[in-house]
Image (tube, rainbow, N blue to C red):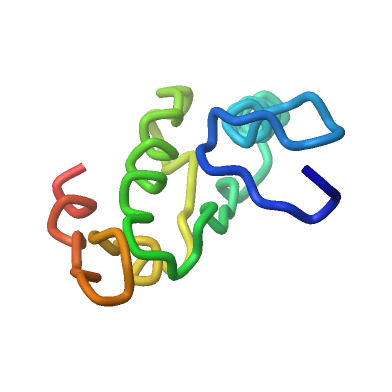
Length: 102
């Protein structure tokens, strides 16, 4: 893999950096809460606009630790574009209901 290549899962190591997107997300949320910053972590999930990306979105939501009972600890941006089912552009579908249930 070369620089700028994508990972297939948030559990895959980022080439040349030895860290996974999941580790980055978890660390950012924990640091944000420990520092008591005024806003939740703002995340653009991996696989923006790609058929089947709803699984990545659900996996990202599963990472969120319950560290704050007063406000959200994670804000997912552009959620509509992270809620696609299917495996190709021919069978793309909405999985927004699956995301909303989470």
